[in-house]
Length: 255
Ligand SMILES: [Zn+2]
Image (cartoon, protein in one colour):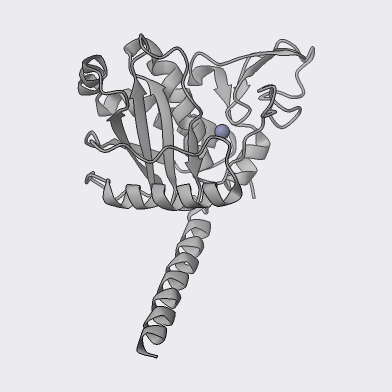
């Protein structure tokens, strides 16, 4: 009897916490305060090259992201000077649980709970308590030809971001990180998951451009710069991407 009461009490606590967090997350998108983001580097393949690369990272390396979102928010009439503040946290020594490959809904839910638990346990302190935590898993580019997919959760606002650990990859890394950051605020992918081609019109930065191809920019959640109807390229940096209208609506920049 006693145990039953305790169990119900615990369930109510968990339920209360989830409801409260959901309410906080929704009111957050009013954009009257900036989002503090913590980025935590992780040496994903344990090589000394990646260790060395991580030791060279500074807060300034991540400023282009904050600058980029400032510019984009301005285009949508936001008066806030800096919608995001990115803080570089200490290197995290533990590896987060990897997202499931061919995922059932149950696998995905289990993973997302494990990952949120990981994030709760592995959040080295930064100057301002972050609302968004991004784990940057750096891989040695000489040992890995390709990276598996990055992913981020809007529930709990955490990201699992696979990147190449080298100076040469940094500009493209910032594009991947910015994309994943917006997932934590509920922005959805705007590309065909099979072909990776951006979906028209919402995955295009300039859907009204004539002629339509080649496009000059990628829509941030469309992920690629459409070159023709059947070809698209990964942008070299954030400078080649824009936030489109649909994405702006999803994250509350347009009401
Ligand atoms: Zn995505």
